[in-house]
Length: 430
Image (cartoon, rainbow, N blue to C red; front, side, top):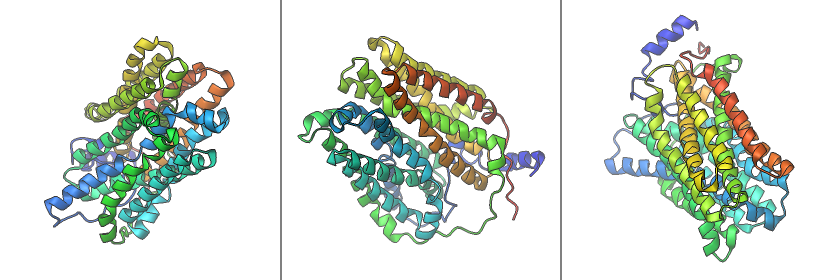
């Protein structure tokens, strides 16, 4: 496609006009299916609640482990390298298992794949309750694989089944993601103290909400048919496009920053002398602020077609906030947590929005989404891994904080192009 035809297609495309906010067009890695016409209001409400409950189980695996990581290291004897791998493993899975999800959905239906993934998440989360290193790694792997596929498939179902409520459902979906991370960060340490099984029991207990969500989702999976997408010409050229790589780099780096926060903010605060329960609460507060920023930032980002200023401002807020959590006095670390939450919550929302804005149509957006999630999350896995290795090598969190700032600087550099009013070059002709 030429630049002129791309721009013409963009101006005529309903992608940005359908809802008035591109965030309302969620990341799509399954092709559009038939709308849920003819279903009762009660059935649609149950479907919507089910989707939100599923989303509410996609982040607890990360933040629950980080709040009790010092106890895990103490009781299992993991060194700095293996502790870093443990925090990184589910993030790597988010990238690796993003790629097979669309084909599995076409073969078995998205609903049935999601059911299998929810059961896998419950199994993996439960395995961590055995309290030894092999089961911790196996459980994290299984949970990460299940989360990865649902990350890819669930937004497509929102688009397909709620075409007139996309903005509402996407907002609820994003809030549920952040709420699960906040709840796990806030309650895992109190559960550890209250349960006779200690931290293994506290980690395993997060399998219960996943099982409940799977049971509620079961009727949807049983009545689902095979979802073979209509034949469409392949999207070619994305992996040779500079702008697509800048969008992917931005997505990956902001995710790397986010998972450093999930994995190491609470241990960093505890290392500085904060009580474990207070560290978990501060991480939870940071995630709650992220949840609010997820809703507030996209309308601001799409007021103009150029998102560079918004992206760079959010990167600066996240970097300043994380640095503040390390260098500010403990009594003022809440300021850093708020700034970090504003930055990180806004960054994930604007990264999702950029994928839609930089694609000429939904078909290309689906493939750009797959590229950004698959490659981006593999890149994101280096964040908590390097942070842990630097912490082990230096004995302090100064180096991981500088790493976070370095990621922020590179993310800002990638945003200088990813945030411009341009479209990726992709050939969709048969």
